[in-house]
Image (cartoon, rainbow, N blue to C red; front, side, top):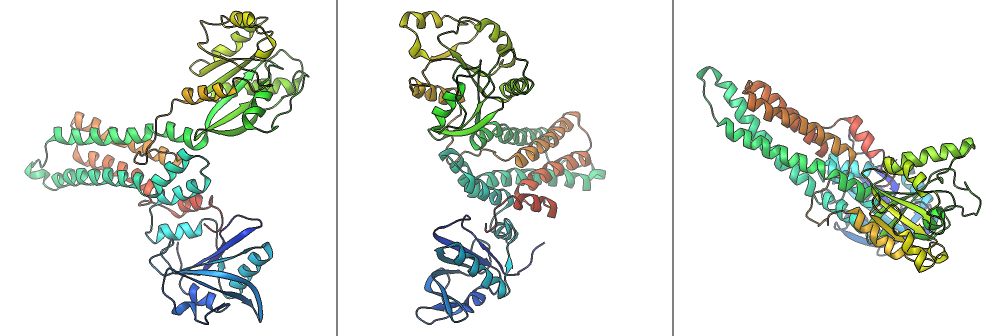
Length: 463
């Protein structure tokens, strides 16, 4: 599963920038860089102390390829737990690729996606859930996603799982000890006390699993479907909120025929906006498919913005409501009266009474003139109804973790039921160990090459 070959990769994103970083890890990597690096003071990197930076040139034969800064880290005090070197060079693609070529010619191997982080895991620098949080940290796009990733990377989630596994281990040890003395009919612990322990573990696992709804919304964005009839202003509103011309805006009915999605950050929360095809009766086959997708997106959304033209809203709003309301049941539904600039104050008062029993949330805006959109954004924050997440909160954001917790929950519930039914201790012990197994899958105490390959294969090269 693991070897000490020297691996190398460009760790900064592809493209031209001010600087780039080429990273190496593995036994002998410092000496390898020595073979192509000339320090400004003439000293070898292998003679230098750990955690130091050195200025010099990378030499390609007798030619200086670039002036660089070289950082050296010695095992076990590095990200990977191995000797590690990072070469900071100028961001020219030519320079980056040629430094990497020189390193490979000296015997380094090109790193696979996620291989540096995988080595950190295999060398005990972090557990598997912490390793996965590295990818989440890189991908974080808001204060909330950054905070969750940092908490997990620092071990908040792992510590909680370790507490639960320790309780389970003590639990099964008592059960199995009783089995060893079953002929003497010795009871080492009161069954009611074991039941309390099982219930407590079930509570904490259930709480972690339930947090996935919040974690998933924070990580992937709260889905917001923008729906309504054709020419109500859905695409205009999408473009306004995104501050770009993402969707085509036209007076022609049925312009939007497919789903258009993008994300927006409002006060640190990510919302995934979904512009949909306008709802109307049509014989156009392609537009009909788009309208079918509109209703599917309503079902998938947490918040539904029903956009209506304030000038014509009362003409067939009841007919459209019959199509929308059943699908949007259980969703946060907002009736958004657009084009409010086209009606008088008296007409606005009339519109406020439309569907007042069916839809409680409503707002008046003009997407064309950017009126009321700030209030709409504040309404989205309120409708998201996400709890405040502190640095100490343990929130599950990873689907793999959630699925393992659900399986662990089933196992511990079997234990609790078994205690109620006073079943044999060997069956209880089996269920307890199954629960421990699934918790161990999250942290990597139980892992396979297939699981590791699937996880680290999603990382970028150089991380």
